[in-house]
Image 1 (cartoon, rainbow, N blue to C red):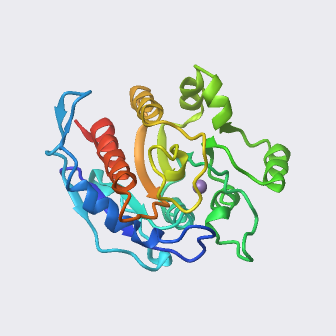
Image 2 (cartoon, protein in one colour):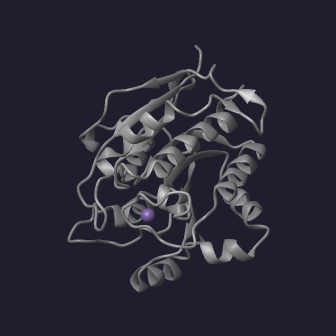
Length: 260
Ligand SMILES: [Mn+2]
């Protein structure tokens, strides 16, 4: 069977705490993606031969499915970050041989936030409870309570300020990932110069090329991408750059991981 990328829009928004509108994220990324050239200059490869199937939106996160059969690569568009806990729970029903590369400005390790355990600010805590290994990258904001939890549990986070000063940061991260990886990409990991239309923007984020270099190194290390999400875009009409950056990110992922 011919492999294909399967895009699953998940316009879920229940617990956004600051800027609103992430339920409009999937539509904005798909709309911007129509404008992205299907050719990667760096790789000198056209990408229009990659089959892409767009599924109907999933509004109830309890109904999230994961189907990797026949070489399908599922890519979920949020929506708020909470959806990742539902995705990982779905993946876990069929496989356990993977780790998560979590890119985010926030560690998302609070036990509860705003009175709920299912806040976008708690998603990695829920995943930690599932016992799935993860590597968090680009964090530059967390609570004191989270920092104590991280130290107590021996969780290793690649903070943005460390990446900023370490020329070996990519090597260190790649080394920690298992063969099969799932990427959870909170778009606020980018510096606001790249994406600023997001609910909780933070200064000092990753640049476009830092992200591209990280993904290229992961591919070069022969990692196998088993799924991905792009979450927390809160599109603003006057800010085409943020939506377009997310669509360009999708294209970069396709070029790096999906060309045969
Ligand atoms: Mn975040």
